[in-house]
Length: 346
Image 1 (cartoon, rainbow, N blue to C red):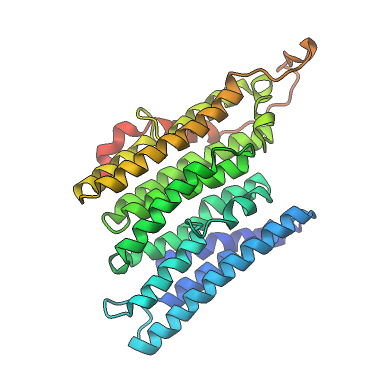
Image 2: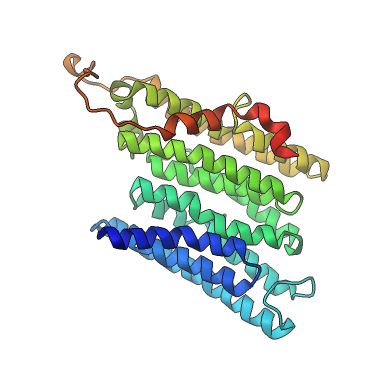
């Protein structure tokens, strides 16, 4: 693709969520969502293969449907109240439609079917944008109107997402699909706490992005799209493999690591609000998620791919190393910031 075109596309993707976050006018928020949607389509369909075309089509159809519902809500709300923001007086039906359309945009269950398929059909670096940056705009709208949301629907969306994210990732062999199901589960955690303490949603989103970015970088370094290709990584990049293992444990929410912080804070907050059943179910599902991350670690570091003896030790001196300066920093941030929890939560 032409470099100037690429710069324009990436700039539009960057500006879309920024416009959505910085505006209180619903129409401008919608414009921001549309910018990020339309700009990412050429990147999804860039590879000349049926799989990427299918991914781009699925993404466009689901996102365009959600955008259409949002626009309908904005127009009906303006017709009813004469204002470009959602108010306490806004019709409950409109608020529920808004919540469901944003759930479609985020890939929350039961509107999640597009997300693993789209992530599987696109390159890893585009998958990273899709699972991190593209989530910010819809979540920022939910954050602005969290007091108006229906807690029952929000809880149903959250618990079903946590369940689908945990169960769906169990039988996957494709790393991109595993990361997509991980995203669905994390979005479920963020939605669960939204009606009670939206600041924890932001904390969870920040930590989720901090964990997902280095994980995708390690996958991109090894060009690992399946568990089988990951099992060859011990031979090529042993240090990156160690980093990936720790990041995966952090993604699962194992206590000494950063990933434990949002889960701990969210469960504490839910218990304060008498949601003991919800928090228990979510904690059980977090164990399932941890299981499939541990399975990835097992295939990476505790199994040796069948190879002949000559190829077992590749000489690392003659290889041209890819210098990656951001990965060590992100690995430290994604594993060792639990001691800062008192500063982050207050």
